[in-house]
Image 1 (cartoon, rainbow, N blue to C red):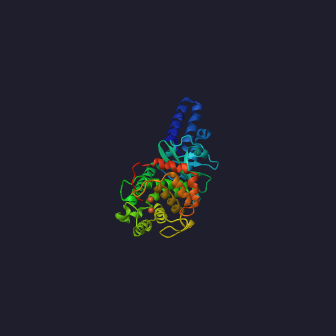
Image 2 (spheres, rainbow, N blue to C red):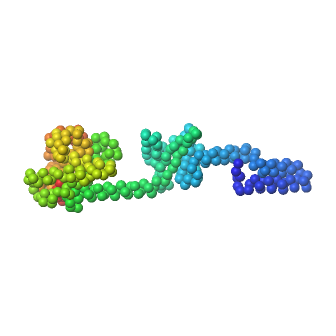
Image 3 (spheres, rainbow, N blue to C red):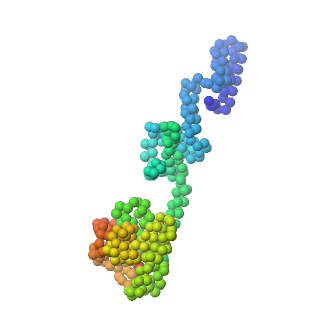
Length: 367
Ligand SMILES: [Fe+2]
Ligand SMILES: [Fe+2]
């Protein structure tokens, strides 16, 4: 049993001896009893008053809970009993989530929760006092307690965000160079990325795949870096030989990207390789058909063509919307995945909205 403050037992012992001295000189039995009591509790470390007030029990519980968690942890830790009531918080948790009383209260503060079915790990994210915390729940073996280990992830998440943003920017710039090797590329790759994202959402792809696809799709024409200027920037139609060279940009793009293990690069490699494949098998470079073409390839194909037809090029004017929609309908099941064309038409306002946002009045592109 610990003292309430340093030398508390010794002070009680000393006070008892002084009271005994006073009692012997004054023959006061009350002082005598109090003196004996203080000497007993001081020497034995046992204090009935603390017992009555529950101070010892509270302290014992605290010591028990402290013994279950890593010592000197500067991050907040909360312990919950099997009913979900908060039974303990360490010093670092004193000022964070001050109103937390039970696990149920966490639902009010959480931004989101990640549950990893494989590891049974649940990670709850919340903001408090301008910081972003993650809570990781773990049952404490041999007890009925669940520990919630907090982690101040503010700086880490900021750094992660910066890295992701720089990656996006880099990919985007590379895509623009691939498209025209000319940095006044306008909004072609941006629009294609946004149409693709919208189509992916409507197709019911998983959110993380949609995000990857949006990041990767600006690289669909990266293989054009290897196409000579005389072909890439030719005003007017390409002859047959030139067209064959132009078509190699799909497999060149795939070769450029396929060696990376990064998920975004793997998606980009698929898109570069397959964005000119056609649903009926008449596309290039591999003549894939139907669902042999990855959904990423099918989506980008539609997004890319919709964007290109609606924009002015050195060899053609922008097509009016009616003509584009007729073309999509005509190519449904030929060039394009019929389901995607239906989704596109049923949700046309969403795509027109993206188009309006990205409109550049004097854009002249080759693509
Ligand atoms: Fe292309
Ligand atoms: Fe393109």
